[in-house]
Image (cartoon, rainbow, N blue to C red; front, top):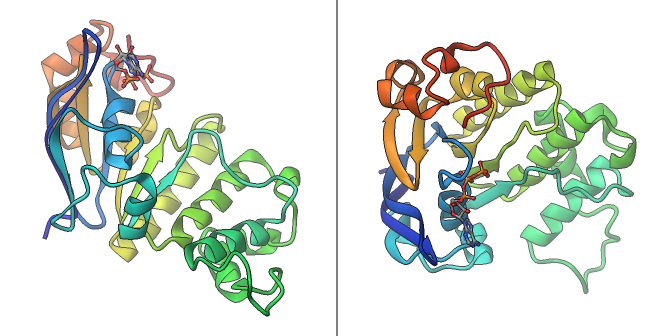
Length: 258
Ligand SMILES: Nc1ncnc2c1ncn2[C@@H]1O[C@H](COP(=O)(O)OP(=O)(O)OP(=O)(O)O)[C@@H](O)[C@H]1O
C-alpha cells in the first residue's frame, strides 16, 4: 500500500495560486525531493502535507487514511514526523536529554511520574543517538556541538516519534558540503532500513540528485515534471525553469534556481 498519496491539492493566497492540482505519492523507504525556483510553491505543498496549511481543495492520505484536515499534532500521532530548516533543539540540554524529552512527549509523560526525568527513556534515547552516530556526544550540551552534529541529534529526535513519513524542510541548510552528504547518507540508510518515507525540499542540487529516488519539480504552483534524478536532469522544461540555463542542473555545487 502506498504510504502517502496526495491528490488534487489546491491553495491560493488572494490572487496567487500557490499550488494547483498537485498530485504525487511517496512509498515506504523512498526519498522524494520537491524542487523548484523561489516562489514555486514548495513550502505551500510541504505545509499542506504537514498540516500547517489547510488546502482549498484536494486530499492527503497516509496509509489510506484521510489526514487532509488533521492538525499537525494529530498527523504526528498518525506517523508524520518533521525536521526544520533551523534545528529545533534545546541548546542548554544535552543531546541525550533532547532525545529523552522527545520520547517523553511522544509517550505523553510530561508529568506525574515517579521516575526522575533524567532517567526516563535514557536507554532508548542512547540507542537513537547511536543510530545517528552521536552516542559519544550524548552528555554534551547541544550548544557545544557543531551544527552538523546538532542536525544529527535533530534526526534522532524526529526518529523518536517512530514516523512512517518524515518531512524534512531543507535538511542541509547552513551545513558545510561534506556534512550535507553525510547527513543525507545517514538519513537514507536509516529510512530505507526502517521503511520510512521521506519528503524533502532542498535548494542544494547535489543533495537532491545525490539522494532522492524521485524528484518533483514545481513551477508556479504546478508540477511540471516528476521522475528519477536522471529523468529530471534531461527534462527540457525543467532546464528552462532554472534560469533558462541548460547546464544549471549539471553544476556540481550551489545551484541557485531563478
Ligand atoms: N501566507 C502567504 N500569504 C500570501 N502569499 C503567500 C503565502 N505563502 C506563500 N505565498 C505565495 O505563494 C507562492 C508560493 O510560495 P511558497 O513559499 O510555497 O514557494 P517556495 O517554492 O517555497 O519558495 P522559496 O523557495 O522562496 O521558499 C509565492 O508566490 C508566495 O509569495
